Length: 220
Image (tube, rainbow, N blue to C red; front, side, top):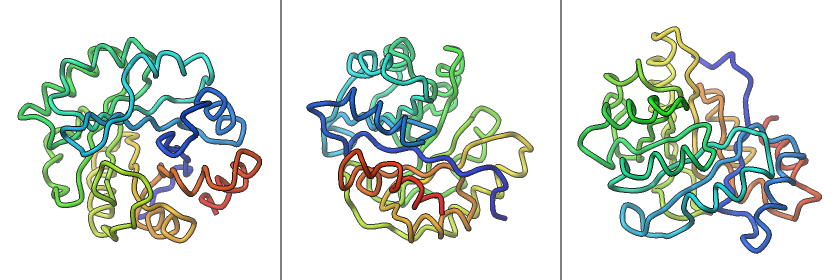
C-alpha cells in the first residue's frame, strides 16, 4: 500500500562541495529540503571515510531542519552519544553493524532522539520485525553503501514489505530509501510506499541555483 504521508526529501551532503559545507546545507534548506541526510562512513563497515561528530556539530547552526544521521559504522554503540550531542535529530544504524540491534536502538532512544535502522540490499525485511516497536525510521538501501553515484537496485518488493510492516504498527514511522534516487526511480519507490527520499547527485547537480528545481523534480 502506498504511503499517504507527504514525501520528504533528504539531500545527502555526501554529494555537496566539502570545501563549503555550511553554505551547501543552508542552500538545500532554502531550496525546500525537509531533512539534511548526513552519511557517516568509517572505512571499515563500508569502503569509504567521510566525517565524524565534530563536523555535524559545526553544521548544526546552519539549519534548523532535521539532521538525519546515517551511521555506516561498526561497531557503532560507542559513537551514539557523540552524534546525539552534536545535534542529530535521527540516528540510523545498520542492522548488520552489530549483534545487539535492540540494545543499540534503546541507547539512541535513551538520548531523547529518534532511532532508525538501515538494511543493506541483501538483508531481508524480516530482520527488523522484532524492533518495529522501537524504530522511528526504516532505511532501505537501494545501492551497496559506501559511495555516492551508484545505480538503483530495484528492491520494490522489499520496500512494499516494509510499508506493510510499518502500517501494521499504526505508528508514524518514516520509510526512507537511499541509493540511485532520480526523478524516475523516485516515482517507483514512492509508489512502493516510501515517504522519505535520500538523494545526493540528483539534488546537488548543476549548482545551488538549481537545488530547488532538483528537489521539486524528485517530489513530482
